[in-house]
Image 1 (spheres, rainbow, N blue to C red):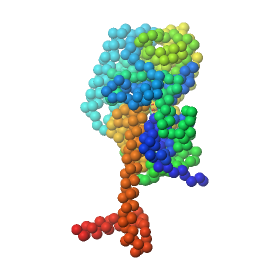
Image 2 (image 1 turned 60 degrees about the horizontal axis):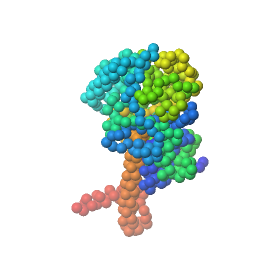
Image 3 (image 1 turned 90 degrees about the vertical axis):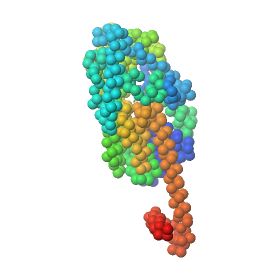
Length: 485
Ligand SMILES: Cc1cc2nc3c(=O)[nH]c(=O)nc-3n(C[C@H](O)[C@H](O)[C@H](O)COP(=O)(O)OP(=O)(O)OC[C@H]3O[C@@H](n4cnc5c(N)ncnc54)[C@H](O)[C@@H]3O)c2cc1C
């Protein structure tokens, strides 16, 4: 058997958080880093795919939080690398709400229902804040009026599942602003990550050639003590290091993909299990021709159905890719899990049913469909953390000996977002740098103590002390000094 490869730090996961942590370490002189990534690419939940002749984003799509008092770091990177972005004006979406007979709700009725939903959400939040204590079940707090009609249900879905400004007072909106920009760039959202990686890993002509970044390495076991870690991968490789940064998703931590030896303490596993994980699915449909309204204020439209979240929120891509004839419909949570479990033909039939209700039976059939399966992906198990309580985040993030936890779910203010993952990675990288510095100081101190003992030990024939002997010496010396005073 080959001897295990040894480095200072192992980073598990090459999503935005793992990569930003690696950047901090490598740029600050900790160069013997190994990044183990389960899949065959970087980016994690930032993932593009060719569909219907254009590049679509299966994962993160928006840069959320632009135009506020602080600058969103992902927006800065997008500007730096000229990413093609489009302002998303959701304000008209609630004037494009269709009922099941294809009629659009009058704007006054929709605006009124929207206002009521915002008021109800605000009241719910105030109550939550008043009741706030560690571990509160936020799902148990019911809004003051429960949405019942298809219109109310559709608006409730838009506000909460689509996270529109005006719903929850999300710190991203408070700090970075309420504007959102859709990334629609043939190079993909992950272009930002490739450009970032070029700054600290060896690349050539866009190819990642640095052997510190290892693909198809599925971490299955992590043996840890206070000062070292051994990581075992599915293909039988063993990696050793002084520290590990675990940047896998919260869904992976909740699953049994990675075994910890010794097991994680109870307070840690409880916090991990307490974190609610959203499943958010964008289904892409390609048509031979357009049949939906385009033009100003028509980018988003809504289907009001008696089942909450049933093919509710739609978007066309004509602004970004004219003539692409692509529609995207967003499903979440139970609806996402349901469609992941069924054949795509079934999903296509359901989506076409919703479209026929809205636009009539003469519309053309879709020629292609793509249904991402984030819930059933064992390297994700969901799409992002759902605004976990601060204390839950702190417990998930808390360092355990040589294990540092990172990822979007460890960001206290921006969990769930790309910028949350990016900033969490930077924070973890800096915390580890600080620890490495402290460890260096500790070992210099203990070396100095050993050296100062040398003349004394020469008479005993031993020139260095074991750790236990040093400890014994320190204790007896302290007693000796105490006795001298
Ligand atoms: C459908 C969807 C839509 C989204 N929309 C937006 C949006 O519009 N705007 C926004 O800001 N954010 C959005 N997000 C959230 C955003 O993508 C994430 O918050 C962010 O990318 C998370 O980065 P991360 O580094 O924390 O995790 P990840 O990107 O998940 O990185 C973790 C990495 O760990 C790897 N891994 C997992 N298990 C193992 C293992 N055992 N061994 C080795 N490697 C492993 C994974 O393959 C992955 O590459 C969306 C996410 C999804 C899925």
